[in-house]
Image 1: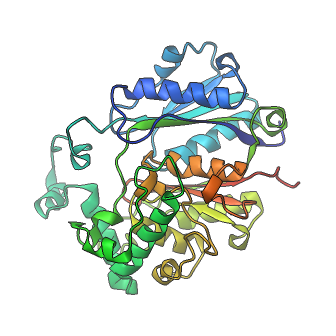
Image 2: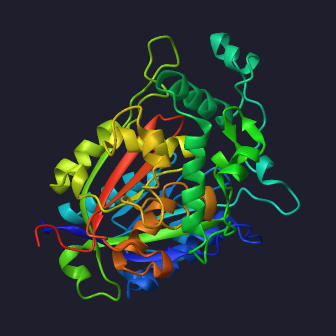
Length: 388
């Protein structure tokens, strides 16, 4: 068994309103970019993990598209926004066990279409509703936005969280995005801009909600000792964990108040041998401003109910005590599910963040959130080998 696993390659296609390429082609491009970034060749790859997406994402046929042969690991995974963290942990386990030596993890999606609004990108035909399941549709809960609005409203009612506190997250995230040349949204915003943006599903304004993007991102995972001889500074995997709370949306449920971060965070930090006080940078899944707030609480950066005040204090933005979503996140940079926080974590760990580079990057926490707070993954990354 090898001593550790590291991320050694990062491949990112154009992101945003990128048209004319299918998700499979985008995924293939990202894989090639990641492998080249590591200073490797496609022939070195013996493992491929493909993330499910919503806009016709590729499956295991991607291996044929790339011309990969004699793979020792090949599968498609789906934990929604938690998939990226799960893929990387399984890639690391494969490397550590000897099941594979060089594993690529990739996500691609292309829901945006020319001359169509971003809001219509994920439109699907109405599902068939059975029994009491049809009650949610009858009450108007026919979209992800509505369910996250319900979760945010529950947090507000229970803890006194305010829309202005959610807005502080949108503002600090956009401030980071102004420093990222890859970000889709680079114009600064104010709290007044947030409050004036239209309702999507009350209490969520437009600026509380993530972007919609086309594109693909891939990473390469291999053994830590091998990583030292490759083209890029290695990003070492210190720990990982998952949490799947299975909240029921009924009286007495913790839905909206806690997430799987409360489970996956302690597991990952224990494996890494760190505490919450050791974390220098956070890359949190921000499909909504609310998910950042509740994740901060569940990880333990502040007490339950104090996430709003913590965000409003300025701690998350440039110059703050806990640099968070330093590339602009999914709210302002690009929406590539869990690959958004993961890609920025790799950039920060390498020290390649340019104007947005965090001053201290020794320990970086990465989170992924999937479903309606149903799934969570956590990674602990570092530019340093574990125990060094």
